[in-house]
Each structure stands twice: as structure tokens, then as C-alpha cells.
Amino acid sequence: MKVVQPIRDLKQLEAVKGYLRGKNKRDYLLFMVGISSALRISDILMLKVNQVWDGRKPTEFIEVNEKKTGKYKRFPITPNLAKSIKEFVIEFPDKKQDDFLFTSRKGTNQPITRQYAASMLNEACDMVGINERFGTHGMRKTWGLFAFKKGISLDYICIALNHRSVAETKRYLGILQEDLDELYLQVNL
Image 1 (cartoon, rainbow, N blue to C red):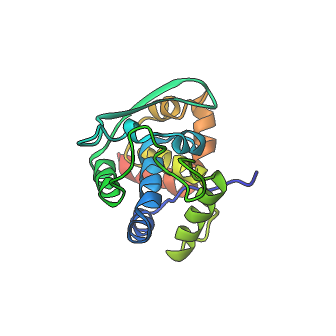
Image 2: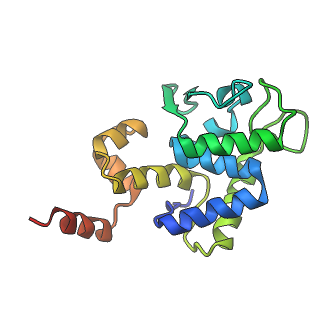
């Protein structure tokens, strides 16, 4: 498996969001869930409508048992994610509560494939000029990197990503020298 990178620049992240939002609300919501939750794509694709929408409004939290680890994970729906859920529900009003959230056009109530998700995300990144390899796992890495850039402790990020150690999280996020340089400049004693 080839290593994917997070989106490192907020302007590029916003460009991907804008591109997907204008193109397809389902794909936009998938991206929003990915960058808002740090979930793996296998867990994102298994989400059901009732996990994000109670029939009238977005749920307060999304709760899953992670496929890879078997661990329970709960995270709040952020205001930006809630907005994307509302836009999705307006565009797809016939979705039933027990339907998969990210339904494929092929078959009846089948989720899209990992391959489609990867292709869609790579196309969006190409369209906005991101040259690094992104893929589905890049959404998870993007969440972790932006959490780090906002000053969230690596200990907490490690827990959120279900990593065994902070060292694993540092490698995973690909913390670059520029990030370390910025830390020194921020401390400025």
C-alpha cells in the first residue's frame, strides 16, 4: 500500500470542500465526515442515515464500533459537519433511516466502494491542484494534522486515532520540519 499524505494547507482543504460541495453532496458529506471524525474509510462507508440524522435534525454524536479495532468510538457532530448533513438530507429526502448513508447507484442500498471513494477524493485533489498522494486515509491524517496544528496534545490525538504510542502518531502525521520550526517560533521565549 502506498503512503498517502494529509492535506496540509487550510486553503487547499477549503478548495476540496468547495469542489465536492458543488459537484455531489454525497461525496462532499463523505469528505466532511472523514475530516471531522478521524474514522477509517471502512467505518465511514458502513454509516447508516440514522447515525447522523434523527429524522428532523443531525444527531448530536456519531457512534461506531470500529471495524479494525473493535473499539467503541463516539465523536460530536461539529457545526460544519451538521451543515453538510442538512445539505445532504435536502438533496436526498427519500433516504430511509436504516439506509447506508453513502449509497452506491449500483444495487439496492449498497454503500459505495473504497475504490470509488479513493478515486473521487483523488480527482477532487487533482482538480484543486494538490499534487501529493491523498486517498481515503488522507482524510484521517488531515484530521490529525489539523488537530496538531491547533495545539491539541499529541497524547489526545493518539487516543482519538487509537494509536499505541505518541511516537506512532508523530510518524503517522508526518510532522515535518516546518511544523517543528513553527513550534519554536510560537514559543518565542
